[in-house]
Image 1 (cartoon, rainbow, N blue to C red):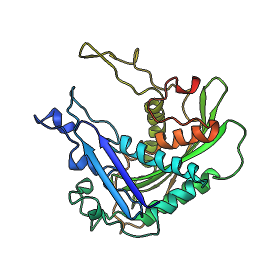
Image 2 (spheres, helix red, strand yellow):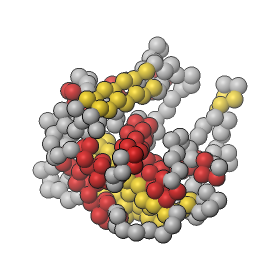
Image 3 (tube, helix red, strand yellow):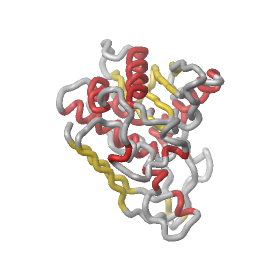
Image 4 (tube, rainbow, N blue to C red):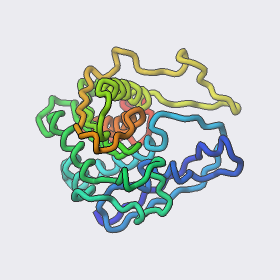
Length: 293
């Protein structure tokens, strides 16, 4: 790959607090957009004008969700087009272990509010979690018909995450998630049980987002009021098992986020897995009834 252009158009949460805001703020651009970790000669990131038409609230993983979704699904699409394994091609575009120079894409990289000297963008750590997640998930081993694996990996909230989702899709378009494998490098981990619970819960929340997470408007009002008309996955739809693989570090490696990072890698990994299982490419979330048509 010799060129990468990522365009993002979305209203900013700053519009809730300040009049006249119609572009994503630098801290939003710094969530899996301008901090692209790829070793590609030509990279261009653009943001378009998008005035907000409603108040915007916080959501777990924030702008990493749409940016990471586009980035990681596109890498898998390119891999398929040129006949390469998605995991191998993802490692190829990330390139060799190195500290990524974000000044090539922006001068306003906020790095989640922490200094790059303490928390550099380390491609080697991202490569490592990809290899761990893939190995633990049995990447490359045969699966039955209509079953597939997908992978996605991001650096978000100063933490490196790779997720492999295994999916099964029946003839009617119903999907089940037999297994999820997540590798996380969050530096020195103080409370491993909390990390496990955060990432197990994130798999359920992310599946809800990918399948059902849509808010609609009518006559200027939100139509969904509560869980009676906003669907989330129940226990019978949830991933059967989520394996969380934590990269150990001594305390000299600074600890980083574990509450936010679990969500954003799951949806692109899921949609990449659906393609592997069915050959159907989904480019819009939520999935809803797209598998049944």
